[in-house]
Length: 495
Image (tube, rainbow, N blue to C red; front, side, top):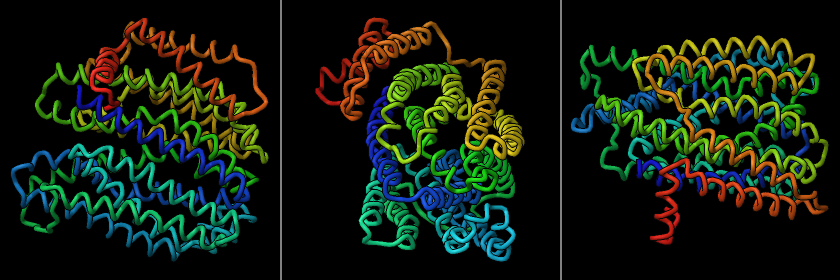
């Protein structure tokens, strides 16, 4: 568990640094880019990200699992990597043909005022998707080699610094919107290049297309595993972006509404940082434990990881809620709706995170098919409610659809994992963490609002963090946290 916690701390620090840069991106975007144009860039990015997941076709999951099976067989390992890189390229090429042939039909589904934007930059989507495909796959290879912080640094730091540079150039009229769109796409070549560069330096990396490397039975096993994980990956990623993808076509305000909604989604994404960091570092450890059928280690890693995730998530949630008034004051420019949207989305996300890493567990267990069926059901649920609520309630309809669906989905998965695998994340320590969060929340709201929002954020957040930390030190809910604090005192470094 030590390596998981240390890697998680390192990854979380990098990711939170990226989140601060991301907040700066949001600030600059809302001040320099008009709502419709901002909504368009977010829509293009969301579409490319989803298509990247679709045409990665679950092969990043296959690579993460099967590469450990071929540690001692270079021929099979290199062919596996080669297939994982070539197959998505072929699938994207087929899609691109259909995409360009059906462009008028696709554009017809958007609001009339947005179609000129979409038509002008229609050709960028396939290339953008290609960058996401290889970022997803090669990043997963590095994660399988326990190079987590490196890939996180490229994604969370490098990309956002480049994005900030582009927005500043646009804001001060050094580049036009055409160049901003082109730059938004092409900067993704940078992390892809470095991901490949660092992968090549790994002894286990190599590319080959040796069709005879695997037997028919092995191909069937790989295809069977990949197929279900592809469908699962597609459905899970649709869950994260379906509300945003449907908002622009269904809301009368079109892309402009997406600009407002996306700010709220970004604020909520900060809540997911500890979850993603811990899940990323836990994945290879749990995979090995399942491979070795080490039930004691599976339970230990799962329970402790879920608790550590909750500890960080609770304080982040409290910081978000107590500083929403500062967020709207700083952003201004007609973004007042983000406060209720964030609170609505927060309900679903807290239930999602608090019920544990059930997606991860199911994906590497013999019940991965069940995870797929759960996800498909949720996608249908969200599609139905978004189609019903967005035309009438706009961004509020999208937020409630997503939050309700996430709540139902995760409660069902929680019950399933508990019954089938005998694993559940809750204990008396969970109550201690929630109690610490409540005390910190009360402390954060006792401070009077200050005129300067930046000073208010700093002081209010500092008080909340100190109170939360003191209560946790008193209650001692996590042995990992205690060991980490002792290590910091001893070695005088964070990781």
